[in-house]
Length: 120
Length: 268
Image: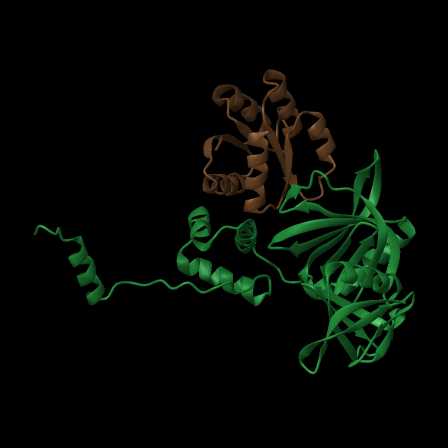
């Protein structure tokens, strides 16, 4: 089970992810509502894994991912975005994302992906 | 024509017989004793270890055939390639996304897509995929990066083994729009025409994600009664169906007495 930081600009999605991950036995160590806050929270909390929304105000998810990977190349980040933005996959993978989930998502698959990334 | 042993449904029973698989037709020996040209087939359904073939101009001839997977696979391929259906050569990727998670080893397969009465079939050298029309949750014409080029594809969202799966079809632009229109028409019954308020939409999203009633009530700060009313709206618009009805109970005097007794220390 992992210590997870959830990054998403909508409280609804953060709460949903929190419920799903908590039901899978994970510890939600923090939340962030934009990319800049995500980078700061990562430095502060050093979680085992980050779920990162792609489209966010101020600093977007890709930029935040790059900043986190620059500070900690071993960081494990799963990108999370809406249907129709699958084109971002390549960019995210190139930037160091370990996994990718597309909204809307289903709890068992999210937990499976998190487990895979945590155990890799 | 190659002959293989199969079972066919006849008079409500499964009867052993021989099936001949030819280039343009199949032959079923007694007791059915008939030939079915592939081009007369209007529908094909698959179930575990059996296929249901519907033939005839009005779809009046229905044959149920049970056999091993290898035989059914050959049979399905012949039928899909030659039956009476909208069909075209295409590349497909199925599944590409499962439950919102990208399938890492998904690849494009070259084959044919056929749209039958009850299902959309993809057939390639390596696989046969059937998406039942009633399981299609969405059809979209979109673009996808393939070999560093943005190409138009048809995206099909469908239910499969209790999860939502996304598949893609790629073919020349001239036929892609036709395929898209054809699929939209075939799945017209499942289109959402009703206005859904934001709260009902959020509840639908949580149900989709696998949250139970208790979790939804907690997340959205809803009372049991409020959630029931939203469920009624989802049921009324056909967006949801009842999975099971759970009872809420309170103890009777007898029940309270049982609990009181159970809590007494054995030494008292």
